[in-house]
Length: 282
Image (cartoon, rainbow, N blue to C red):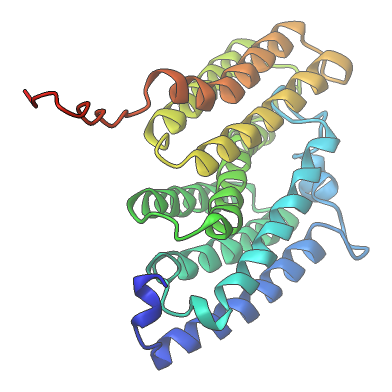
């Protein structure tokens, strides 16, 4: 039995579990509805198509957004997992469940601002969302998981969420800037490349900083690579076409995917080996 199982669950623990479970369900359904899953306006068509796949050089191709199905499924599983009676006093879940719920509310708010055409407000919301997810990742680094179930439901879900939203933030800012300036979709090649270099650098930084939690860091890298690869695909085959941006996005995707595995090989902390029997300790 783990130490937290000896701690008596409090009333606030049970309230937290129920509130997060219900809130997560409402936030997921609300986000899906706002994104057009139940017949509403899809995000790609909202705000005059400012976030469509052909709106900017940094817009991912439409299939990229399929990752939301995986993220929403992970959040739903997390909501159920944290509500289990045995998880009420888990110190890790005590620390992250409220912030995870806040991230879901922020995601729903972001969809609402885009649907309303408030693009600059949507930029503020998505930046706050990334900050919340990054703070959750810091907490997950600080408090070790209690089991593989915790890694799967918490680390993997948060990693995918953080990685995808990090790439989406760059696309969101690019779309908002182009829309405000009235620029053509294919304007700003040099700036797009600089942004992709910055996103790749963020992916490498995540890998280095989070290398102590393999499930978290690999999920983050995969999600970032996924988004960047679909930017490359969109620029290679769709409009606006730019082979330069395609190569930059492709290389950034490779960096995001490889970085977590590179830090495992070369930056992993290794515990000192115990001395052999009979050998003195120096």
